[in-house]
Length: 206
Image (cartoon, rainbow, N blue to C red):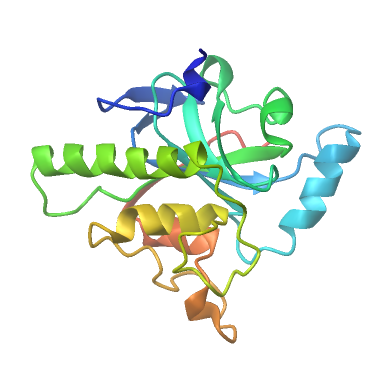
């Protein structure tokens, strides 16, 4: 059994992605597409990303151990996948995800909260277990972006939102996103980035 097929987690893990530290439950923020080569898949996802308001197009939940993550994306369901060699490389992960993207940065929903270290540990584990459970059950991708409260299906940022709202951490704040009709019902990736007190932008913008 590979790490990505193991849907259990019993401890908080630490890792680095492009030199940025992450712990179980932290949120990886990415930008769709890659125009650095003639790869048509990278160009396709670059176009897709243009329809997502803001700089951030996609949200991934780091769970561990090593490079294990959870996302709801191009495979049309919640999945686990592995980051190879501590480097975010959309080309190398394409076969796992069917998605090509670049690292924008890491957001830390638990930073700046008035909680004990033990409570933060418990939340991290629960967030990871919640997300892994959706992957184990193969929950489908949620195409109804206005319905962010359902747990029958998930889009990327909704999965992070639902994992954290259970602990009183609301990532649906409408910060940093256009004031669009019905926008308060949609949890946008940029909104999650702006909602977090602490975030680290990736220095590699290529």
